[in-house]
Image (cartoon, rainbow, N blue to C red; front, side, top):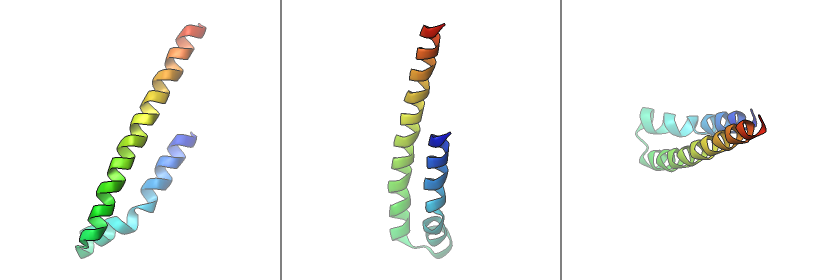
Length: 62
């Protein structure tokens, strides 16, 4: 659950940039959002790999 908390916290931290970009048209905020989306993609990949490793370990222990 720690990973979910990290992901939620990261997404919450982006709210102001989303508002700045979509509501006010701030292009710099859009750049920050794109960079953050890459980080989210990386985090998702790490979580996915972690899940696969745990599942593999659980299979081996049975």
